Length: 405
Ligand code: ARG
View 1 (cartoon, rainbow, N blue to C red):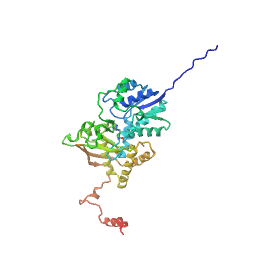
View 2: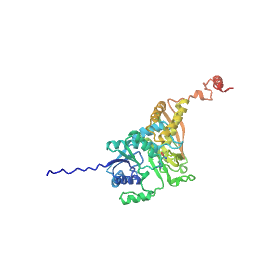
View 3: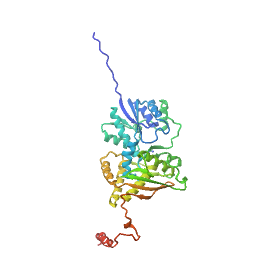
View 4: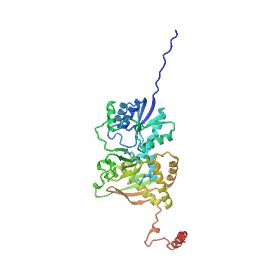
């Protein structure tokens, strides 16, 4: 009898690339996905959140592997984050609801971009994240991934899994020998990167209560600060910050430096009850010393070099731009089109702004630019006045003419 060759049985596991933070949720997700039959590849994006600050990267890697990941990518994306996300937002003066400089919102599309890239490289047809079903971040991840590759499947285990509390997750991690440090109580939910920190939950959910000092991580208590101010000078070229006090910095280092200096003077705290995309109002506090300093300085410089029409119109653009960032529409055609406008508007945004940091405030006190539209001989009330006041009469007559009945 002819021998039949043994059948080759190949089990093809579905591959998934997971945005991994190293924390409890995403570590449990690794294991959970594995139990659902996935081969899990973890991706950690370093956006300046202080990876390796509390523990070294090998500990994060070890945890991912212990949880059941087959592979882990850890990528330092700080330069790309600063150049391609933070700078455009700064040029646009992007701020959500007047108080949030969008640190978390700006980071998400970049993380999603790499999730998609790694999925392609690994020939995975699925990506996953650890966001809850109530926040904005799930929207940002999924809308971005969907724009960059509409074919990809996206999993959000936290929206559907069986765990009802942090305790249950801790229990699950224990049972599966996932090395999680659960000794630290977690009073807040924190998201951090080089542009700022977002802090929510716990006692912050009581809107009537002032945030306790222990909620803040990088800013000192403003009221407890030195009774003398600190002056700093920021120099911009075409809307991009280049120097602090005459010293040239690489962008990433410039931001880190300002986070330190600003933090010492309690600059950059905000407390906002914001409108989330999913229709909920939520209270979040933010710390963004560098972002606050650069935003203030940049706006101040624009007020010197932009003409009135451009300046006023740009405020409308800023508002829309901020919404698009917040809403997860970074890779939308409208956002790309607004970038065209914003970049054009930065042609003359070169010059220096001197700021005074004092007990949590950050105020521009000096400005200069080779493109300044300020003409002292026109605005002065002194004897060097060159403004022809006789012309005003005709101007006012014509300006007011349409309104006379
Ligand atoms: N509310 C901010 C946003 O939607 C931050 C979200 C993440 N916050 C957090 N504490 N984990 O952009």
